[in-house]
Length: 401
Image 1 (cartoon, rainbow, N blue to C red):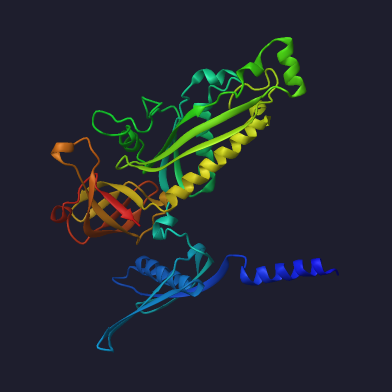
Image 2: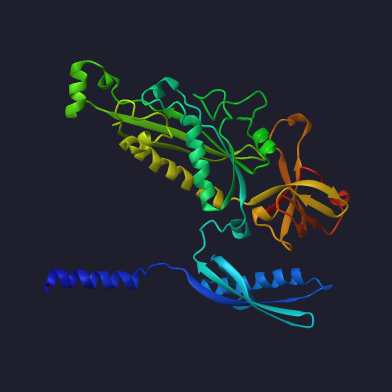
């Protein structure tokens, strides 16, 4: 073995030791809870959460201490233990009950948590609507007959987001949020709102709205597509510039406030090598087989990933649809991942008379609702006080961070 190869092997070995490959670990944790008033389900959920905390601390614990000293003497000492680990495929593998005491064992596939620390909201499916992506210059779509790009692009984005299983995705690909495409999304309406995002979100009962504008579908050199003999010869020998551009702006809006959560421009350029009549639309097989179509497909995959990353750190928010005494009905249920025993923070949604069309302001009621009954599309819960006492009413919101 020569010295160069030996050095390479030693370097690889050192790198593996210093930079270990991150991988998921299956661990088990114990959780305990007391059964009150015979409510076994509530106790089981409480014990499950305690077991998950135990598993998280086993996998990755962050310990910090703080000492307060006065005249050289420690007067206060605090130690905080936290974990940013995330659990996947968590399930109860053992349960033991003795009287009103319940003990459960949970087995989970652990991995390092996201840097945003999204908490319990990361396990819930947020509701997202994907609207149309209108084309700024429709004449550019004549080459290849891809005028359907404004509807097909969001449809593919919608399908890609659905496949992840992390979001509830709804399509509105024929809807158009912006009147002024050139200045979107900065053009304001008469009521100071950027778009009609809030109206669309309310009609579709979603938390976020994904939309955008296709700004460029043009070919780099229009002269390269001439019909003369010379033009065809240049294309045949590869002299003509047959590249085509794709530029799209994508925006993600919060449906409750209308505020932008994410905005990014995506662009690519590749050879438009479709033969005469080979492409008949943005969703055709002929389009996908071109170098340009493959490049655009990669960009759309990046757009899907960007939406997921942008929403991963957002809290889970759902509307209050009914308040009856201390009973609260929410607009989300089991399809969103909610379960009996889950607790959500209640926030009052306030509008002021001098800005009725503006963004509603949320104020913390310092009260939680505990879910008792969970249905596919809605859920019922109870709060400690009646709605009249804390002014919680229809169209307020419940949040899990």
